[in-house]
View 1 (cartoon, rainbow, N blue to C red):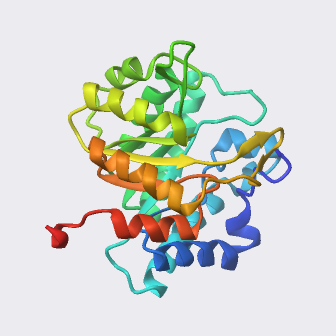
View 2: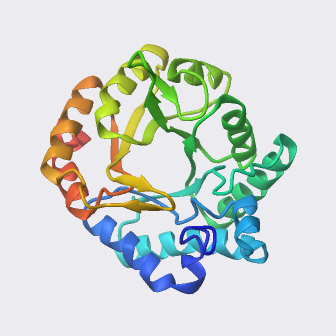
View 3: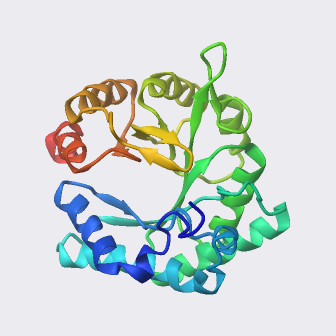
Length: 268
């Protein structure tokens, strides 16, 4: 898993494939594409032995998404620079080093032309706040994606921290335009959305996952069908979600159906 930084090196080793994946999703109706940089934070690349490619991978990740947008002639598609602080080895840097790592990463993405920064798998309060502050130094909009599970009482909590409600309140001091529940089991989403609605006044989004993680890989043998995912998404829309997408296991057919159910201004 650490040997190739979970395909984080794709922008360097297989750029045509990465660009093509972006193009496929734009073709299927995606209006936001996230760069292939989930695992290109400096500390992740250090663990994998590829730190020397830190700038190249983050810059090229944005370049490939922008090239896909140009190739598809879809100038309104947004390119989000994806940033996560996850560590595959469990060796998360201390706060000051983490802040420096993420500041550098976000600055590279902004210089490469990202439209916004998407913080992914935010899972505890302290590091989420560090990530927000680091990314906001770019001046770009910073969206926060929380990953959640349910506690013994059935209430949403961050994967490695407090309740979701406390996590949302902890970022209330920052100018965050959008919060999203991402990389979270489909069956947990409704409860998460209710907590978001009760604690957040701004736009809300969801991109759930479907599959099973068996160390060290994700297994996608029993992924939710596009029709069932769309049915769940209709409920999320009724709850007040404005932004829909998909994470691990959610493919092109899922996005195609989402495109048909998401209301647009022209539909009103």
